[in-house]
Every structure is written in structure tokens, then in C-alpha cells.
Figure 1 (cartoon, rainbow, N blue to C red):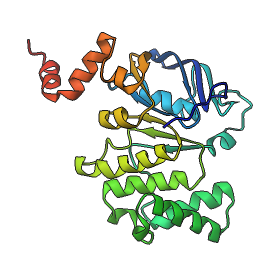
Figure 2: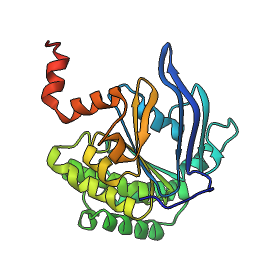
Figure 3: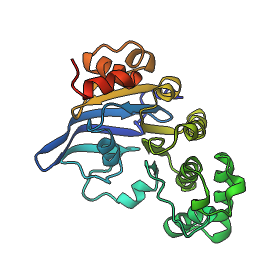
Length: 263
């Protein structure tokens, strides 16, 4: 959970952010700040711009207009050393993106050695420590194909942590997992939150957002419709769009009926 950082530079600041793909306006003027140690969950329907916003933070998508700052450095400055900025940011995607021909340990040590210039022994020590953190020490010599989806995602989190990030971005990290595998991944994310990691999480896991987030941001149509404490946004939303989204999410039967156009 967040620490009080009154007057401190936000760890992430997004100002007037727009992103268009051709004529499709995906983001329409997003303003958002995330303080050091704060956990912010971004929720909303598919196509609302959540993942695009996340990808703009580390310039995987280049904004059409607006500014993004990470730790006071403007990511959107044309002269920025984006590689240096990205070394401060860990990102976990829906898919695990592990190298299937490398062991779990090698998946963790390769980026450390190539990007951070760590020696083989140091990289291996850091890998071992982060596998321990995610509860997978016994899988160090395994290959990704022998792991469950949940274990692969925890390896992906360990790989990101091994780079020593100051900020972690999660893009629906449990959406590709079978329901019974979700809990272990969310437990690792809860651990990171308890340790004070700054986290921006795009998710449909409302229980996680309610229990772990300091703030919840609801997006729809490329704008922030509502944001606030989880108890307010999830428990007592003030906007009709938020209430409608949550009712569909929490009652799949209702969503199915609506999608079929039933009266």
C-alpha cells in the first residue's frame, strides 16, 4: 500500500495524453498521477484504452499528444534515453514471453547480463533470489514448457523484478490463466504491494483491486470516467457507466443476455 508522499514527485505522471490509431481515438486526454509505493488498478471494458495507456507509460506505444513522466523524467521527450528509463520499469504482459529453449534461470539471467551488464555469477544470484520471492526456487532448472501457466507468469514477474525496477506495470497478468491458477499470481502481486512497490495494474480481478489497490481508475471510451478509493469506485460508484460495467462484470449472466440483444 502507498506511503504518504506529500510534495514528492509522482513516480508516474500522465498529462493530456492522447493516442490515435488512424481515425480511431483510443485515448482522449488522460491525466493521471501515481505516487511512489502506490498501487493503482485500472479497470474498464475491452477497448476502453487501458492497455494502450499502460503501454504509453514506457513508450511501447508512442502517444499522439501529451506527456508521460516516470520518476520526474519525461518519457515523451524526443531526446530522452528511453533505454535508461525502461530499466526503471518492469512490465508483465498477458502472455509470458519466456524463451522456451532456455531454462527458468537462463530466462532471468539473460536480460540482466545483456541490459545491465551483470556478470554470470551475480545475475544467477539475483535470479535465485527473485525465484525464491515468487515461490519457484525448485523450478530454476526447468524449461517453461514444463510449467503451468501460473508458474510461467510468476517466472515472468521474477524476470522483471531481477532487473531492479522502481515501477511495475501489469497488463491483465491473469487473463490468460485458468481460474485455479490465478490465485498464486495475485499472491505474488500482493507481496509486491506489501513491500512498497509502485504498481500500475490493468485488471478485471475486482477482489484484487478492492483489497490491494490504493486507488481504482475506471476508464471507458478513452477517458477516465471515475477514480478514487476502491470502496468508492467499486463499492459505491457515482457514474452510471461505472455501475453498468461493474454490474456486467459481476453478473456474467446479465452481460450474456445484453450482448445477445435480449429485451
